[in-house]
Image (cartoon, rainbow, N blue to C red; front, side, top):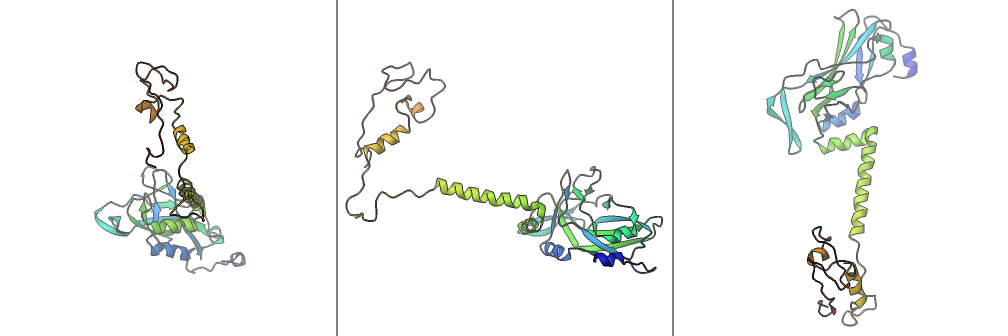
Length: 292
């Protein structure tokens, strides 16, 4: 409804009150893959957000707006083999599953001037959370819009919204639902960016760890002759990684950190020894002896 239509809105007594769900196409996408809504101990907001457009109310009368969460069936559901299936167990419906719109009560003109948004709803699985809507996890729900005229409890308009059907869960079960939430929910953009960055960092770290080692030959090398042989520099460089000049050469200290129980680590070339170490003279190895 455009702004000009709202400004020229007139009320005809006896005309029916109408309400329609906004973002119906978005809700239909979620409904096609069995929508899920998170319920937590501290409460979680809904996405998509339920928004409705109402017409036909008396502009000068006061109305209170409620959103009811109706448990579709009593059975609990389970997600197995990529689909939801009912179980034999059941839970009674929660008490007072109604959410009163925070702007209630208000004039009919107020409710018709702009869409009625339920963005502040928080779903919880705890019955004692004041101000939040308590739902049973692993149960299916639909919502109904209630418009009650103040001073006349018999004047109640109820509008079922089957497109909003969803499964209450403590964590998303269907990966397709998660992808759709990230795609359309602006508040999930941070999660999406973090996921992309994490994947990029993991890929970069993998490339750094598993870099392709340069080959020891050039394009002119004949594989039948002129092999490149390791030099003494290679042996000294490899041995230098073990800190041969400064660390004790016992097995425990050479291949790991110096042992706490040892009184001290004696350099191999200091010519001395302690009670726990026996000094050995350095041994020279040739490339042939090492398997070259």
